[in-house]
Image (cartoon, rainbow, N blue to C red; front, side):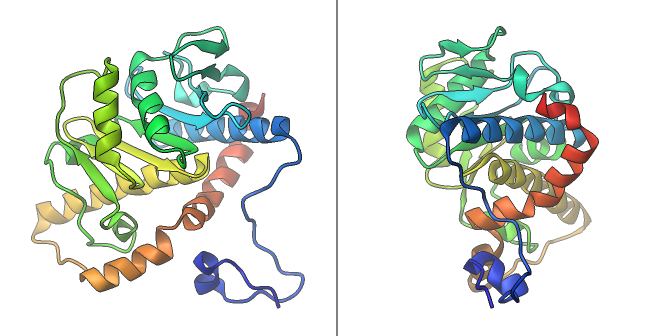
Length: 268
């Protein structure tokens, strides 16, 4: 019998010999890991496009380069999420210098993500977009409540940035966003939208998708009546079950399988 990590063991228990579940991969070379991260990033953008998270030229997902962790891969400015390929991604450093690629970086992407990555060495990836329910919920200036199992992933594990000053173009505002994020997996940017981080692209993207849906669920529940909260002890237990790094990575697997099957050109 094989024993899974705690995040998965509670869901399926020990596995018999010959039965496996996917786990985060390891790599023999930095080139292999870079290729994997870029493919995951391209898949993440395709998913954002599929979920309708695009809003003009707004929104960005980043992932650190495995060889130069002070630099990160990001989408080129003005390219549709639904068309991004691994080969389209650009690499910029903490100063905004373009290290690889032939298109510019969105200034807001550099300002926000460079400060988030600098403040959070553990954050391999970060995701931000102007999704409909995320930006609607952000206008309330309140945290997500533990009203559903999925929302419990963010219970006492997300911040609120309440100092909106227009399009983020200055580094000091990026630093304030990073401070509001703190050591959490997500931050609600008041009057703006959501931002999530993770130990992998898959994790950061999954937190964004499920946080967007949790915002939608709370908006619907508040419109219908007074949502009943899950008690704190249960919410914390549930967060430990569905809100871990591995749980975030694993819950994204069905989405990766779908998008890579339907959009094989993202690997180009």
